Image 1 (tube, rainbow, N blue to C red):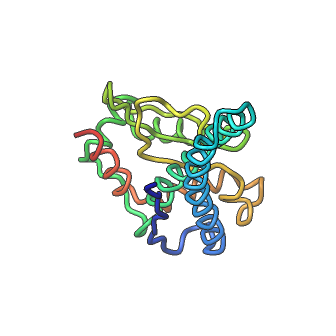
Image 2: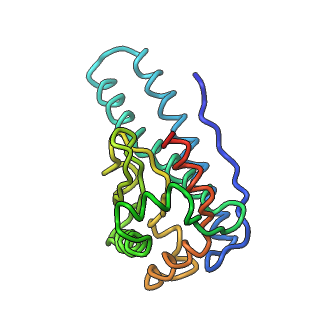
Image 3: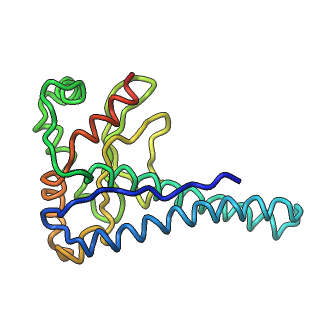
Length: 200
């Protein structure tokens, strides 16, 4: 069976987020890759073991867990990639910027709305998607890693709002500052690459 491989990221020193937090966070990401592969192996193994009630329950529960692990892996890849190679501003001449302005009226209006989504109580992700069918941008909040993912949409920007992403550096009360610092650290070139690769 083909295995998913852990990706490597060139993450520099970040504003507000310590290298220790990034180091521990990358270990969590590696765990999602490992458990994605493990779940697929076990589903295959249990399926070959026979269709008893016990194995059907095990297969179903492992399949359910697979969505959590797989989306955790993919969400983190979008997140860490956007923090790689140092911050860069969004290009006002780029198609992503123009699309944001077209849909929300201004970049600042979109940004304020996205930051508000990120402040949703609980753990999850603030996401900017490109709907590949309608070719339009959509914001969404994802609970856990998989609950609320939009069918037919590709995430181009992912902001991890699980506490492990920020509490060690900001404390629970510093959630808002973490969001502000994320955008100070963001490499918009990576986000634009995500957008352009899907918008073609």
